[in-house]
Structure formats: C-alpha cells, structure tokens
Length: 135
Image: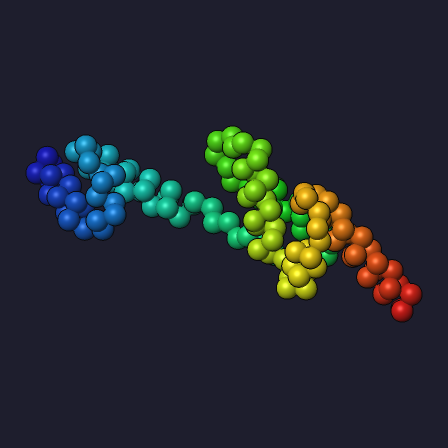
C-alpha cells in the first residue's frame, strides 16, 4: 500500500499546474496532498470578485453614492485611515458616474464630495420635479 501511495503522490505532483506546486511543499502523505490541492482550488474559486457600482444601476444619486462606501467597507481586510477610505470612495464614485452626471459633478466647485453629492441631489430633485409637471 505504501508503494501505491508513493506512486499516487508522485503522480499528483506531476499532474498539478505550477501555480499549485508551492502549496504542496511540505505535504508528503497522499491525503495531505489532496487536501492541499482541494484547498487551493476552493480558495481560488470562492474568492469574491467585486464589480464596481455604476450610477446607471441606481435610481437615485444618494443610493449610488452609498454603494461605493458599502462595497469598500465590505472588501477591506484591515482598518484603513479615514482619509484613504474617502479617497477610495471618491475614486469609485467618480469612475461610475454617467457622462452627463460626471460633467456636472466636475463643474461644481465644492470642496468635499458630500457637498458635491448634495448639489447633484438638488439637480436630481429639479429634474424629477420637471418630469412630474410634464406628466
């Protein structure tokens, strides 16, 4: 039986792709090797992929503004400084704006992102009011 285990161990080492080889170092038994291979692929395929939020996926600007905050809060593994957090939120927020909104956003002269979002909300409210009157 030991010879069979050794042959299977060698076969596994031969068959696995090079990206898996480093995780197999130090494992000598057949069960340990199989566990290491399974763990590698489970981690690889269960790592969540995050799609950045886009304004077009939200009805209101406030909901869209909150989406990057929630996403970044959920992704971070360790605490990050508030300044860096806000910088990431602003980057994700700006990158997901529609062209019209982005143009309006960059034309505002407000110092903080929160102030700019307030202006966008006011603009949005005006558009909604126009639509209400029209229909």
